[in-house]
Amino acid sequence: MSYTIALNFEDGVTRFIGCKAGETVLDAAYRQKVNLPMDCSDGVCGTCKGHCEQGEFDMGDEYLEEALSDEEAAEGQVLTCQMVPSTDCVVQVPVASSLCKTAVGKVEGTVAVVEPLSEDSIELAIDLDDGAELAFLPGQYIHIDVPGTAEHRSYSFSSLPGEKRATFLIRNIPNGVMSGYLTERAAVGDRLTLTGPLGSFYLREVKRPVLMLAGGTGLAPFLSMLEQLVEKGCDAPIHMIYGVNKDDHLVKTDALDAFAEQLPGFTYTTVVVDEESRNPRKGYVTHHMDAGVMHDGDVDVYLCGPPPMVDAVLKHFDEQGIVPQSFHYEKFTPNQAPGEAA
Ligand SMILES: Cc1cc2nc3c(=O)[nH]c(=O)nc-3n(C[C@H](O)[C@H](O)[C@H](O)COP(=O)(O)OP(=O)(O)OC[C@H]3O[C@@H](n4cnc5c(N)ncnc54)[C@H](O)[C@@H]3O)c2cc1C
Ligand code: FES
Image (tube, rainbow, N blue to C red; front, side, top):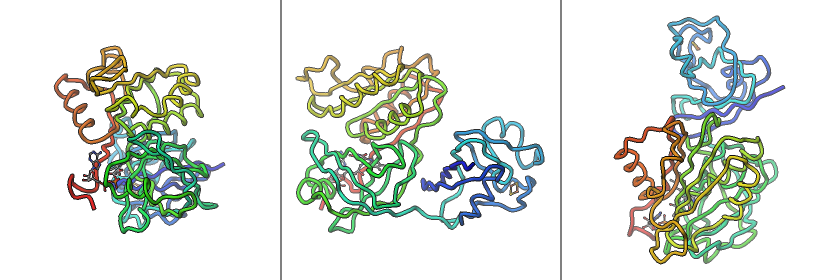
């Protein structure tokens, strides 16, 4: 029996390790050449402290209160030198990956599909080389090198981890470096290099209602999260508000309809900015967050999209005094300032 432990470092790098039954996370990490912070290895110093975001484990009772207080343990903090997992786990490690002599992974693959979904977005599917199936947490992203340039861009997976084919939903930005490659030069069979996975925007264990707020291609990570919920089974109420600028920018609604059939608690609504839109809901996502979707604050909120949309939602929450149980967001921040495009 072995469990998969995702180690999430402070710099956003994630490394996956196998942990044998009865083995501590610290020992498993060392066996796989990830030098997690440690000193005593005996539950005394507290140097190996991290935070378990997901999963079950046993910490025994051999460690000292000075190393980990009862309050810290109740908040989910762990000593990796004492932590023996009994399921797959996600552990946040409060140092940069480089300090643990580990680094982000690199994989190669071949373009399998590159096609426009609308004037605004492109679907990219990459068949990863044999043995390069990628472990990541649904919601995370990866860097993709832009062929023929020294540039890379970040993209959230829209597919499930561990699959041969990784898919992405990419906004077509006029004169963009990646957009230019995808619309003008990319062809099935092109070789691509990917570096990752990265990021702390991933689906946590679903313990209460979830609100998903997606702007444009910010839909991508939610597709991966929802796939995983279908795979695992979930009947919690999950509502998505998916906003775009124009009617024909709404994509993948067939996939959302399928999720609504497969997940008993999943519903979604669409919102379109364009005043001429045929959509029943016009304006911005923030105009359509009625009280019902907030469950009196007993809700985990996930927000992803271009910076103006993410900023608008953050401002709205702030002004309305909305404080959900947990709040996670990913901003699709551009690499270049507007006007700097090559
Ligand atoms: C963590 C993370 C995850 C991301 N995931 C995704 C994803 O799943 N799908 C996706 O489509 N994008 C995603 N992005 C954005 C993506 O990395 C690129 O920034 C985007 O695709 C533009 O790349 P480009 O090379 O085509 O354009 P660039 O050459 O980078 O930019 C060209 C010009 O357009 C401007 N520009 C760039 N983005 C925007 C924007 N959103 N609005 C207005 N102007 C802009 C730039 O400032 C520049 O002037 C993500 C970004 C981050 C940081
Ligand atoms: S290394 Fe000292 S408490 Fe874990």
